[in-house]
Image (cartoon, rainbow, N blue to C red):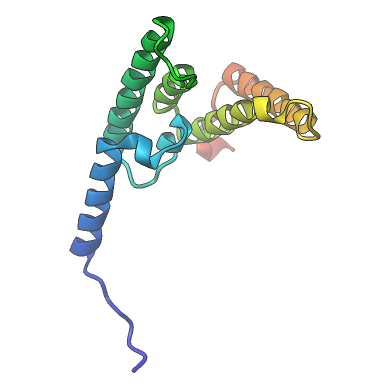
Amino acid sequence: MNELLTIPKSAIDTLQSVEAEAKVARPHAHFTHPTDVVVDPTLAKAEKLQVLETLEQDAKQLAVASDEGMSGGEVTQLRDVLQAKETLDLPPAEIALSVILQNLKARLPGAAGTSLQGPILGAVDALEALCAAMAATPETPPAAR
């Protein structure tokens, strides 16, 4: 009576494919921030790029509407989308650092004047210094470490 339910790999693959298709078709229904796309484990790099291109076009249209006085006060995430697209080309460790930095910077406006502002600023400064140091240091092959 205590048997394990075995789900065929093909069924799991089909479910993941359907989920990925839904995310690509309607990114705003699945992602609140462009960095969420970058770290999504269910999407391939090409699918992530497709989602980010959709978000970029939407952000550009929102910016044009805002310039023409037709906006409802929404904030465009164009800068964040462009950064997320650049992040996709980084090595995995640098992707993680970039996503963390983008996330912390996105939280700064909401933390202004609170006890979180100082620690967030400190973390951003430390991570930016780490990124600069990593960029200035040639990578050592794994065998030499």
